[in-house]
Amino acid sequence: MNPPTSIGIIGKPHQELTRTTVLDLMRFLEARGIEYHLDRDTAETCEVDQWIAKNQLVKQVDLLISLGGDGTVLGVARLLVGQSTPILAVNLGRLGFLTEVKVDQIFEVLEEVLAGHYRVDHRMMLCAHVHRRGECFGSHTVLNDIVINKGALARIIELELMVNEQFVTQYRSDGLIVSTPTGSTAYNLAANGPIIHPSLTNMIITPICPHMLTNRSIVIPADGVHLSINVKSHSSDVMLTLDGQVGVGLQTDDIIHISKSDSVINMITHPNKNYYAILKEKMKWAEI
Image 1 (cartoon, rainbow, N blue to C red):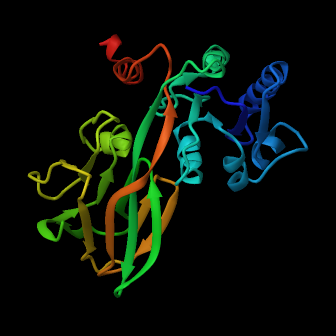
Image 2: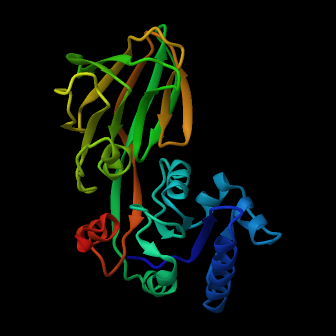
């Protein structure tokens, strides 16, 4: 792989560990003559004057370092829709399936990356279009999942699922998750959905607390497949949540169209770990 010559750094803001890690990174890169840029929030956290707006930063670098947790990576991924810039995700928090590199491993791994000794995983994304009364009023691209759920006071919600215009089922549940393989270890896993290897190209459909115990997760191919989810509930307290970070209020008869996105996210993998080793570590399987 080609070694990067310009690096963007985006960290979880207002965290002391972000500040100290970024300052160490800056010294590390300066000593090697590598150009780097910070976004505004990261620069303010580190009390650095120079910064570039995030939407411009991602266009000016050939590697992005994400410092934080999985949420930080998901925010960076939205900025990279349609671009091929790889992400090196560093974990500054606790459990994180997207952040493979621990903070005390960052310089060891970065040395390998700067030497061109790294591998990139291509992670599929999903695209959601929300239609109301026949017109699209929102389009979103996600790396992890698309979730329809009820608010705190809403009753069970009713959702109708179609796959390639063929009726599948009607759910009466607390909600529904449509996940990528990357997102299978997020909300999907908490809702008893299956773990899918991130190299696969699938969609996982998992109901949240379904009224019928026979409503189980379904794993379907993503290539050439189009989902339509029709909101049948008469509640005004139904939300569409995208990667757990963007929310859209839904109404009765709204239709959410979901398909595989043309965009992928390129994730730099830990040079000394494979996916199963990471699963074992994150799931604490070695302690059982």
